[in-house]
Length: 327
Image 1: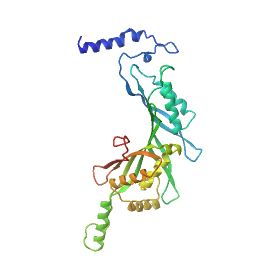
Image 2 (image 1 turned 180 degrees about the vertical axis):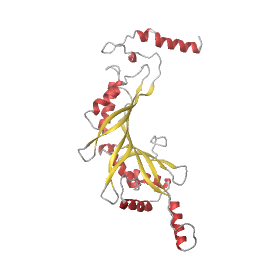
Image 3 (image 1 turned 45 degrees about the vertical axis):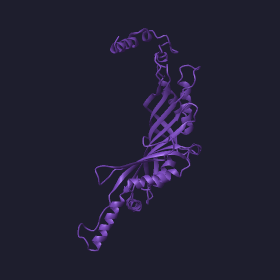
C-alpha cells in the first residue's frame, strides 16, 4: 500500500470508523468524549491550548484600594504528553473565568491559575499533574500622568503583557512587558543646528533665517523583564517598571500639555539628546540597578523624522539561558 493509500485509510478510520461513531468513553452527561481516547502515536506536543480568549480582568492600583477593570486578551497552554489525543480546552476558559470573578491580577493570582491548570487539565484524578503550564495576558494599562509644569494631568496608556509559566519541579517564573513611548532629539542634528545659528549670528552665512530646528521623533522601547524573587515579594508591578524606564528616558511623551508644559518638554529634550545607542545604554544602566529585575531585554526604535527608515537596537542583560534578542 502506497503513502497516499495509507493516509486515505487513516483518514477514513478517523472520520467513519467505530472509534468516532461508537466512542466508548463518555462524559458525565453520557456524551462521547473522543478527546479522552488514547492516541495510537507516541507524539507529544510542547504547547497546546487557547489564544485570543478575551476576558475582563481586575487590577488593584498599588498603594490604594482602587480596583480598575481592563479588557484583556489571554493565551493559556499546557504540554500534551505522548499517548494523549488532546486536552479539554474549555477547562482553561472556565478556570480563568472563575478565578477572575473574585480576585484581581497579581503574581499570587497567576500562580494559583497555573496550579489549577496543572491539576484540572488531567483526564483522570489518578494521573500525575500536567508538567508544564503557561498563561499570557495582553492589555492596555492606564496611569495618571501629571503635566510637566501646569496643574493638569492626563491618562497615559501602556501596552503591557504578563506572562507566567511553570515547568515540572520548578517554581513559577513571571515576566512583565511594557511598551514605553518617549521623544528623542538627535544629538548630531542638534549640534549642527546650534553650529548654524552661531555662524548666522556671526555673519558667516546668510542661508535661512538664523533659526534651525534639530530633528526629534516619537520613539519606543519595548521592555520585557523577568521578575526576581525579591521583586515578587515586594510586588514589583507595572508602575514600578514604568518608573525605571522614566529614570532612563525622562522624555516620555505627554498625555496633556499647555504652553507652559510644551516649553518644558522642549527644554527637557534639549537636556537629553540621544541616538538609539544612547537610549539603549541608558536603559542598560537603569534596569541593571533594580534588584526586583532578574533578567531583561529591550527593543528600542526611533521612528525617524529625518529618514524614511527607522533607527533600531536591541539590548539585553546577557545571563546564561536568559532573555535575548528573540524576546
